Length: 212
Ligand code: 0O2
Image (cartoon, rainbow, N blue to C red; front, top):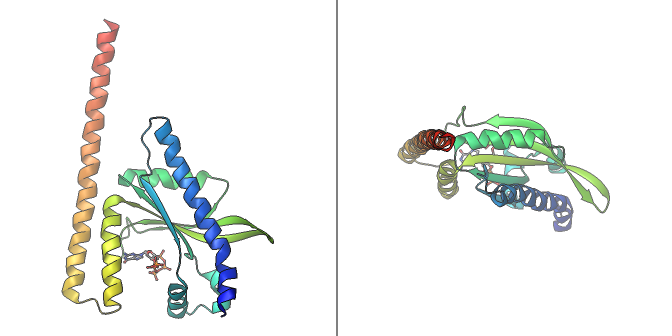
């Protein structure tokens, strides 16, 4: 396919990524401005590189003239959360919106990948207003904790280095590291729970004092 054709195909995906980043960052700002806790810590996004599109199309036997209908992650948004619980809050927010349509969900938190990868993926259809009219494009939203992101970012770059030939002992250590990240998430959730409980206790006590 010619470079100009790729540019034409990828333009609405770039638009979708920019709009979605603004929307999710805006949501975080809303919480912060109200002095409330935000389930969104930070947001990133990218349009898949042409070389990655070609590689994936080959791997999944997708004809190049069908990538728009068949490849769901050309537009990718990543939402990072402090706690696992926040991931499900963000999922509910996405499900309830009217400006994007959920078409599939992949729960790699409860069904982790053999690599040790954990994240919650939501595939949406997102309407982009182009000069030629509305175009519905696929986008993949990956929602993960900071610990999941820490692991996935490093594992992704190592995997890229080794291509298909990740040595088994490295894979084993990465699996152990994924477990450590999972334990960290569990520990943080328990700490949060305890802090919330003691805050509620403190609140109840000060109410009693106020009543006296
Ligand atoms: P990029 O452009 O480098 O981000 P599959 O063939 O199963 O990997 P599928 O079924 O098309 O992919 O989609 P899925 O399962 O939703 O996941 C695709 C994306 O999830 C990947 O994009 C990664 O961003 C992330 N991901 C999935 N598995 C792993 C993993 O084991 N480790 C890490 N670090 N990330 C993973 P790509 O393909 O890497 O594209």
